[in-house]
Length: 371
Image (cartoon, helix red, strand yellow):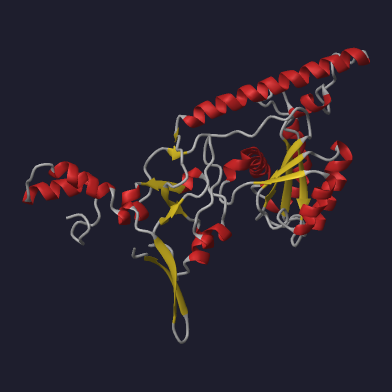
């Protein structure tokens, strides 16, 4: 009634209503519920309807400006004065940002030169750089360049932009600004890029209770056509004291903003813990599916693969895990809890990758392991 073509692997309410029209026995409802909840086809084919797995884990707040920065590219722009890409660099403490134009094709050495000319000369070398897994940031040249300087490179998990939400949000603000002014002439965006950067730096940020320009320099900038009412120069000792107080205050504001963000985000999330020996299904991203189990079209393929057994776990929450399956461990050794679905041990039917060769082709597929 559930697994047949007429049953269609329906949920428990539909399956039970069909079942009780034809049969009746003691404990039928519980038996039907257990059968539906333990159906491996349903576990692998249906999406997880529970709250988003994993509580929010904000990145640590730095002690000062330009110690931790994040970098990302805005791609797909129309060519403007030979540029068609923007490198966005954001300071995690002050939220100060630089918008640097680039043109395809660019290499890791091109991005490194752009960084040295526009960021290093003004702010020095950061302690940590947060980025996605772009080919530039994963290149050996980029890694060796900053490894020799003692800068740590932290890269976000693939298909998980929340790891660097700060830069993604700045990208969104920049794109909205450019759309607002150059929507009629999109090839002129380069002429507005410096104005967009000034607008962003001088805009009020709720997490700072100030603007990035004020936080970094200790005073607001002067504007064309607007004269400042107070032009007195404070004593240096007083200015340094106030600046130290401002940095401490900014850190309090950032911590408070992170706590508020985490509190609001966790309302829509659920905590999941895993232990060594747990059996789980794994949700693979499209490009990993293509590597592990190639097929012509993934539209009707399972959402979850496995099951696999945990060989290592984290104490607080799942930031990553390694599985006993060596193929998946090589392809992708770091998984988020949102991509892992735990199942009962008695539900397990272990699978393995099978390679079937013919005269002209070969097929890779998952088959059950008979024990």
